[in-house]
Image (cartoon, rainbow over all chains, first blue to last red; front, side, top):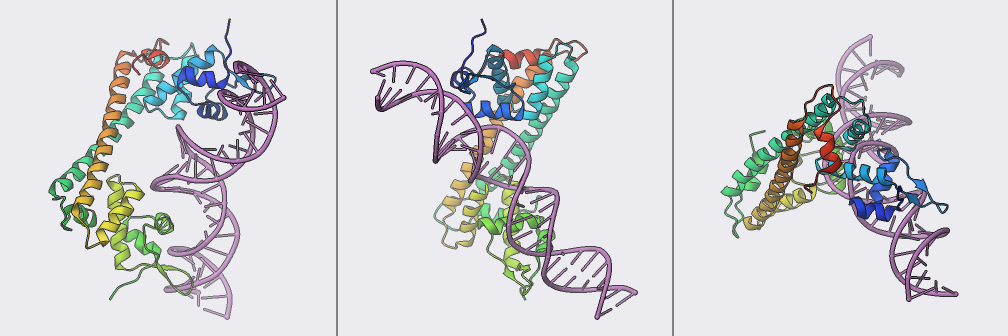
Length: 136
Length: 136
DNA sequence: TTAAAGCTTACTACGGTAGTAAGGTCAACT
DNA sequence: AGTTGACCTTACTACCGTAGTAAGCTTTAA
């Protein structure tokens, strides 16, 4: 009943490259696959589910370390949602900080770019800004 | 008149670690420093200026490759500001794309987190989202 | 039987930064 | 003159997540 697939199939089913599937096994976020006599990895439904979980978590920007925690929670029926939420909110804060940082870069850079004529003249407020820029 | 300083001084003057100064020389973004008889690197005012330029560019998120171009423009009196602006706008677009990406992550994650009670109960919409999440 | 596709391990590289180890040099103080 | 401590040198490793390569074995299909 538990259909087993080799790594290529697992990859196309989950959107995770074979390369990364092996890597996830290596760093311990994905349970080791069983093997055929020839040494081919075999994945069951649980593996496929987990790979989807991992990919979606990556898409939301979680680090592999965080994903390892998320997976532990997921597999633990005695988890407290408090801890999952804590992790999520912490990551959310990181995301927000990155956004702020990028917005600040954008602000400065946009201001400089606006002042630059962008023609065949060498005068360039962007370069002048990078050379002096007091706001740091 | 051109005061020469060793790497530690150059580092404290510019806010770039000695480690990174050596690295910049290695990858060719910073002109090779002269040396004392003992092999200590010696930096002049031009080096110091360039290191400041590099640091400010990094702070705006430019890659080392982009910085190499920016430096070339900066040192080239025959530059056309058009090309500098093009580079800046291209980087600006990357920044904007990253912001959008992060905002999308935030949106999804915030929505999931909002639905999670965050108590001692195991039920957790965050984990359910990561396990299924159709919007991808 | 042979060719193609798929799998294996082991290695390299990326970008930017930081850490370590093992050593040479310089300045100041004794 | 010798010692100490700060500073410098090179060379290496590691981080994170991903991708590429090479050399070789296995399976599937013609």
